[in-house]
Length: 114
Image (cartoon, rainbow, N blue to C red; front, side, top):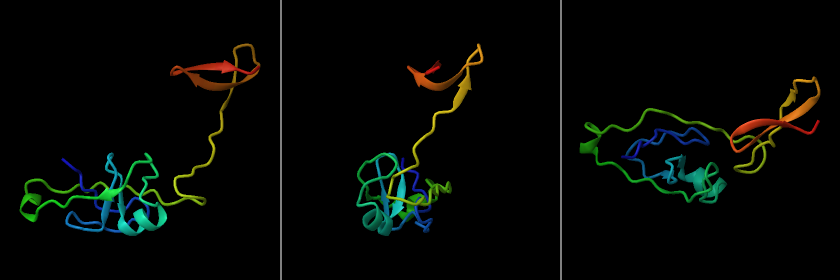
């Protein structure tokens, strides 16, 4: 069953369960029609999936199956939609005191680049 989240992740506009202005992706990221179409070009910035009109739950079903109250808000940080700052690799110190870059390979941390 869909969560029917109550607001746009980008601008925090209210999107009630019966709103025709809500857009979602297959992971239920939720955006208002303005943000989805004008700023995001119909593509979810989180998963790169298609944003489509969110189905509306019939009013008589909302009492038994209420919409979510969990609000997700990720305002746009400068730059283009979906862009994020490059991740920095944290420095670590090897057992012998040499500085190394910690990274992950096959889910396990290891030290490299002494």
